[in-house]
Image (cartoon, rainbow, N blue to C red; front, side):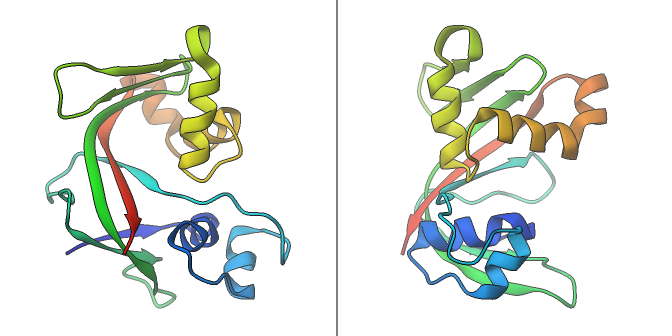
Length: 158
């Protein structure tokens, strides 16, 4: 099993995507009004690193604030696919390399609706919201280093 940790804003969307109940605590962590509509999250984008990422078919353990006193398990899911990804928040483009011979390119210039659909699958309202999050979290790195390079991990409920 592979474990991933998430910020509070993603706890409720992950629980919705897994078909689990959303408690008041989960709404508060994400800054949502109790009872508000929350878009389900079915994937995560992670940097390449020393530790290996999940493989299709493996069980994922999804946590909030892992390695802290506030840690709790959000739920478990089954990894459905893992693909290489490059995210260009400054260029409004995402390039996904699934384990095939072709790549998938989502660009604001050619098909902005696909960027929005991708962002919704990641728990955001649209590409603008996802882009703002990326620039807030990784803005300085991306300004000097170029695109974010990592893996796209998709999951389904157990």
